[in-house]
Length: 292
Image (tube, rainbow, N blue to C red; front, side, top):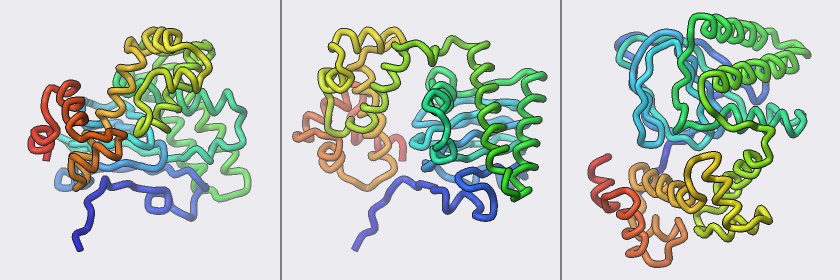
């Protein structure tokens, strides 16, 4: 029986050391020239912060290529499919944590940390750092790394507060250098709620009216909010999310176009093909051939 190909997904059990802080992991790395690109495209079940102190290359995130040169940061959502192509030996660190690490935090803190920091991957995929910011990031990494090895009763609480401060520092850097949404603005909160519902229902619900009803607002209000925050209409964002998942499934699974169409809520696979072609300027078969 043929084994079905799937996107490689790394979970906490595989990626977090069990003898360290629960739901959190931090490590440093130093790449050698003969071992730069050992990991293929993959997803995680957790949030990941990649700190590149030195080195350069290209980071591919959901079919888009972003050139980088350290010092810089990448912040990844659990569902981002990514791979780093390093052109030179690099050094830096990685922080991994899941939502449970913030389970006892107040709702505003969780919202700020989960959405405002790990936001705008298309707008701000690479956070480049100046000399002062590099020193601050290095200090935070050192403190969390040392504390993670202590293993005493207070370590988790100390790391939680250090991580919160670290993420707020990143948010401050983003806010200073780029125009990003204000997490206290009710329209921004509505937009993030829309994104949550979209992530939960996009495989079956493709209309603006469904999501507007979930938020108890009109279609026009939802599209106005989306346009204000993302410069795209609600319908455009719905189409983008469906298209991204279609591309992932075409490249990283062995499912047929008909099976993918059905999974994404299209009863007619011919309509799915027309949808894909209209929104990516090539049909699903050609896209698959070009990217495998």
